[in-house]
Length: 264
Image (cartoon, rainbow, N blue to C red; front, side, top):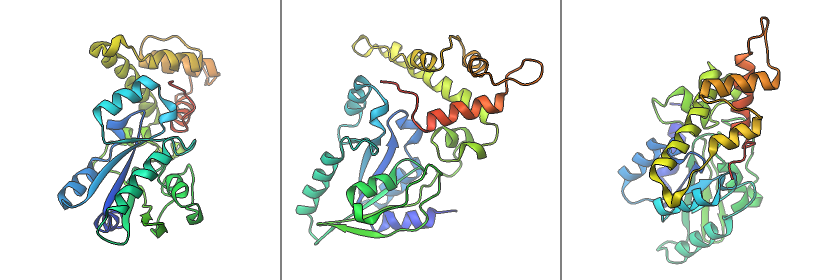
């Protein structure tokens, strides 16, 4: 069960649940288990908060806003959008029937929950780390009429190991078969380009793979080909001239998890 009992307690005791997702891959990082549990509780208000918006382009954000008109779009690291989210919560608190509005922050591990908590309540000083699983306890913090609580990151039951690696829910050095995760990241970007091309939204093509190739200085035509070129470009080779798949995969996953690849 891990931290699920703690998170369930947060959900039960919250009036508003902020579900953080990664703006680069909202459908992959939107914790379906949390969504289902909040809906089953009935009386809770669920707000989807798209974090890491500084890593994607304006047109992609506009498209997300059309799909999620009630969502909020932020960057917990650059503080973009934080003011709007605070204002919305304070307005809700002003019209709340009780003296304070209880706000729970939930989502996958390492999605930015503790960073957001610190922006809401600097005195809380929630521990922030790139290592998943840093938050293990919960504590309510009062900010005006808001009572805010962080929570440990949790993964939906039965979630795929590849998805866990993509969402930074697990330390890259502890992932089994990291090459599968790295290739899936490349395939994910290729699929986003293909979907954008098919939908022809405002004649747009995202060009995610082009930006990925530019970042690494490669020019492959398939996920495996791009992966192989990255290894060779970095000089990650083993005896016989073959690429070191493990080292190459860790590099790709680490760059993805830390947001080093800019898709704007």
